[in-house]
Length: 236
Image (cartoon, rainbow, N blue to C red; front, side, top):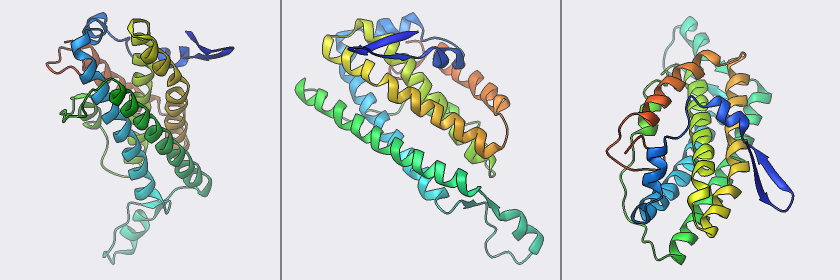
């Protein structure tokens, strides 16, 4: 599926649609189109952009030395050796550079959403988190390097679903929001690919098995009833 962003610039998100296990249900789009839900949509969107930036910087902080899984304080040489798992230098630099760029872009998007809210006199009020990210994180493994691989796969799903929802919702929005949401497709698509590429590089092999695990959880979160309307919520 190809979208025109302006002039001769286009973006193809067919790979996103192929990656995701299901499209956004019509029932969610119908709910998102209601004028009374626009403040919720924009506040949650702002929260998501901020969380995305925070997640990227958290990955940078945790893995900035390229070393993880340390067994500090343990004198057992065998355990110490097992704990000295290291990223390849090229993978470490790629991880840090891509996460740094991603964090900057997400913060820029955060500022843009805040500006739209300000122009529309929509207050930035407290809004509880939806269930989506929590459901995905429930299958993240707790040992390294599997934890990092799963965290990256999870990031790929979040970015892919964001991209898909921007595209699905754009025809029903006013001109300002439609233009803004379509402008995000290119960066969200790139973020998805960055996460997936990093996961495969660090895993040293394709991550199809983990994608399959997360896909099942993601589809359930999107297609099952959800009492809270959020940007990544299920069926209202």
